[in-house]
Length: 164
Image (cartoon, rainbow, N blue to C red; front, side, top):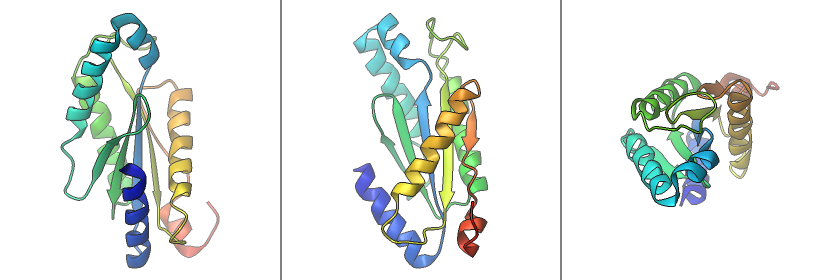
């Protein structure tokens, strides 16, 4: 579902010359959470996080992306708006106060978030948005987790053809 929607939105944003943003959120230290609390509790945790992220703007998409990752697709959203939404999502997960004794950074579940925004130049290259957003997510994890990291490529640079 996510991949199909990503490609549809990418093409639509390309056609209308508007940006597309992607937020990738990864639960911090979820494998130790699963090992410590078990599968049933882990499933409950994932549902709680999904429910906390589910109330987004009309036209946005929140989807499970891998084991403990969530993808949030934000059509017609500039980097500043995507950053604000990503920080809001990070705060919502923290506000759940889901106990996580196996975390190395907090006594409760936290989330690391990567944000990417591009103005689609080629109608068939949506994967570049995913790649840059994963890079930002990895950077958020390297920088200590429980944070939001924005990809270094800006919409303006893409729009005027300059390099990131």
